[in-house]
Image (tube, rainbow, N blue to C red; front, side, top):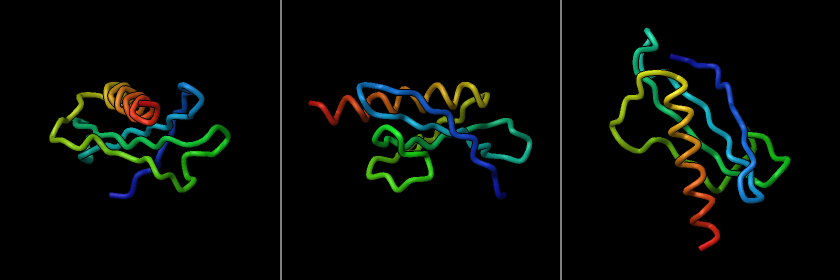
Length: 83
């Protein structure tokens, strides 16, 4: 199933966190996410050394829930850079 990636971006501690939600099924009942952390000004399609997926079996009930979880994961990735 080919999906259009609709990236959302937020600045966090001098970095940019990009998140997209991905439907796990054709009905859009279960969602997952991908997150990328980049330097400011780089877009989500840029090669990034910091990328992650949900990494677990969690199925988010909505696209919004998946995006929110993705930003939480992205923020923790940025925090880890500065510790």
